[in-house]
Image (cartoon, rainbow, N blue to C red):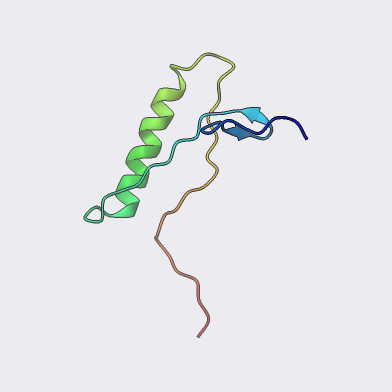
Amino acid sequence: MGAALKRGDASFNGQPAVVMMINKQPDVDTPTVTKAVEALLQSLQSTFPADVQMARTFRQLIGACIFRK
């Protein structure tokens, strides 16, 4: 069983991690925010130590809708 996780601890694939969640304001369109955030995060990757990686676990981009008639 072991000790319980401390509040605020995060992991990804069983490794310690930092979780970041980005929420947009209602008056801004989702594709614009998504593209800007992804570009910024990509530019930050080069500033991380070699053993630090980024991984996107969820991406919401409203651009198309699939549905049944």
